[in-house]
Amino acid sequence: MPEVVFDTCVISNFALAEALGVIEDLYRGRAHIPEFVAAEIMRGIQAGNARLAAVPKAVRAGWLEETGLRSRKEKTLFESLSRSLGWGEAAAIAVAKGRGFRFASDDKVARAEAGRLGVPVTGTVGILVRAVRRSVCDERAADAYLEKMIASGFFSPVRSIREVLGGGP
Image (cartoon, rainbow, N blue to C red; front, side, top):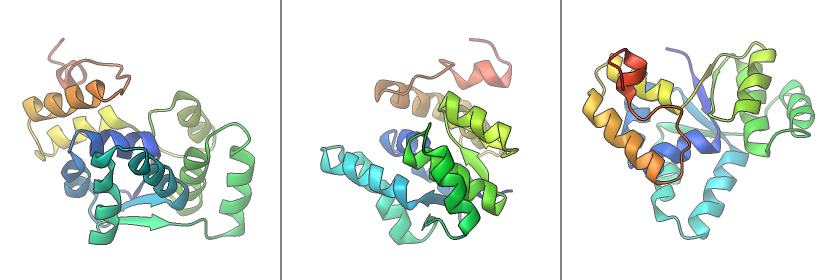
């Protein structure tokens, strides 16, 4: 399975739904967040969203890696992308492109930009579908996580993972 770099929205969705274990089970040792995403998460924690504290805890546990922009190529791409995207999305795409990772984002503009650059993309719903298909959780648990994410502000394109798996609404 490929390495994945997460933007703030996707990693936050899982943290807010108390479902980071899904990410850990699917991507242990292959999950990354850029330093800019870590900073955005920290601002959320400081603003009072305690459930986001699971993200730095995952970094300290070692299964989620916080990474900086390493190469000149990554930094240059970040600078270019940050003109039209948030810093977290721009950094995550730069890391994904520079290191051959998959980019996890739900942001339509960021996903389009990644696609233009040939970076493979996934998102919150795709990860939940993968979790069901890999028996990390069942449909009922995935739907419960999705419901918590929606309650926390996620604008999901589906109301049930079953819709994506072919079981209808």
